[in-house]
Length: 164
Image (cartoon, rainbow, N blue to C red):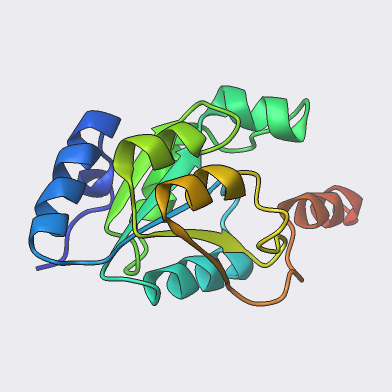
C-alpha cells in the first residue's frame, strides 16, 4: 500500500518511537538530511543512495529559519511544509522530519540510526557531525552522484533567463 507524502511527515518523538519499533525488527536505520529547497535530480540520487544503505530511510528537512541561516536572505524558496511533502512523496523515503538546528547532531543523539547518509559534497572528513557519529557508533556513508547539481545554480539560471 502506498502512503501519502503527508503521512510520512512525523514529529521527532514519533520518529524515535518508530525507529525503536524498526530496530526491534532488526531493520537497519538510515538518517539523511538537507534543505531540499527546490527538489532536483541530485537530491533524488542522494536519497536513493541513502536508502540503499539500509531498510528504513528517515530524512530530516531543515526548517525555514535554519535554511535562511544556512543559505542567506531570500531562501528558502519553498516553505518547510512544501519541502517536507516533496521529500515525503519520494518512494525511497519512509519518514520525514522538520528540524531547526544547524546540524543533525541532536537528531543523531535522539534517534541513533545505524547509518548517517550525506551527499557527495562532503567527504567522511568534512561531515559536520562526524565526531558525534563516531562517538555513537553510527556509520557515515557518502552517497549520491558527484556534486553537479545545485539549487543555488538552478536559481541563478532561472533569474538570468530572458523573460518574454
